[in-house]
Image 1 (cartoon, rainbow, N blue to C red):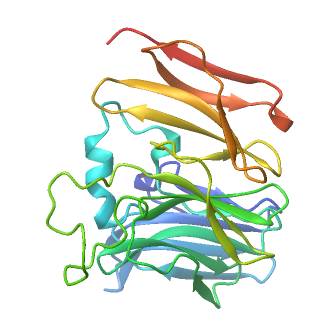
Image 2: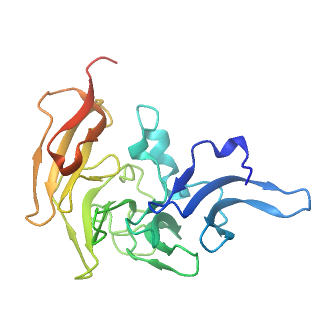
Length: 252
């Protein structure tokens, strides 16, 4: 398969190495066929199909999020598909009329399901290592709906938050979604064990952020970074969450 240079790094291998997702910018093929969107190549089944025809991986409702960041978008702020640990499916943030939801799509593209069907902004899914849980960021605690006709809708409110949200976890065994802590997340969460989720909380106005570690079973969170009034960048966790390496910036 030959991909255009515009695909860049938007290539996402499944853990089993038998499937790969890639994004291609919209265009017109020599035969007049419209191309572009998210594609799935299944090497085991020898099939290539377009899963979604879309102008970009960032849903339109979240376009303002990327432009509002004080720094260039980091890997944690990108809206990309994420494979389940067993490679049977992947999760992705998609536009759903006025809001965004987390969907899961089977590895052969034959089925998909909306996991967070509500009127709020849901984004940045992340699988636990054992595949039992899916963490994601949601603004539902502050804006439960973006549907214009809904009571208390955030639609039309200029300062309504779309730049992040709180940490939520979906347990596939119990089919329950619970909020973990009250901290505001500014990028995607990262699992460091089957029960621990790391995340960054950022003050967009002051360029200040903090690194946190949450236990989804107890519902408790603790701040890992010690410095005040600094920006935490590129955290990389050791397996099990015993150590973390990150950059700390205190100058513009």
